[in-house]
Image (cartoon, rainbow, N blue to C red; front, side):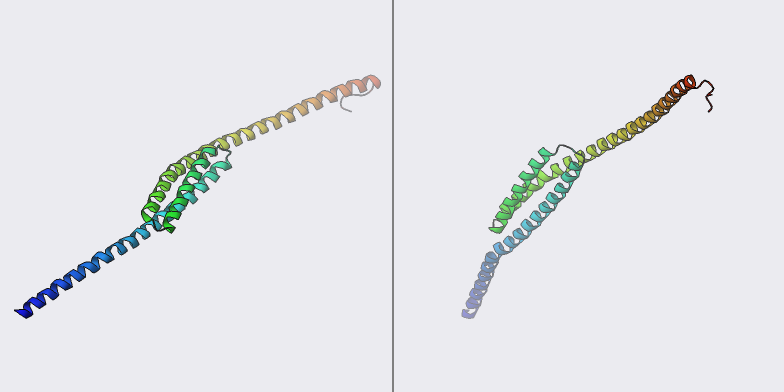
Length: 172
């Protein structure tokens, strides 16, 4: 019976040791997953910020007012900086939280910048077609008025010339 008890105590000791090892290693593995999750979320937010910058620049090409977009983008960049700082200090839950706040800001901003760019593109197309139409009509008017002016000037010249030289005909 003595060996039975000692083997039982060994088994209990082994199980307790195994549980202790699992308990100690569990936070480390969770912390590693949290760090990976934080890095993934931060990288995703960074890609969205880059995309939003491109969309805002596209909207600016069409002379659209983007000041409110830039303010929102600055807030998102500040949140992203907070996420990076939290990640560097090992506070992964705050890093994830700041990165998710950044994503929330950027998602609305990307849609608004895209809408403004499309609207600006339409307005640019309309103003371009209007400019082409106006310049074409103006060119035609200048040409027509030039021909009319030239014919009046020619008639006047011929009248004056016929008074000076009575034998001059219109065809000469």
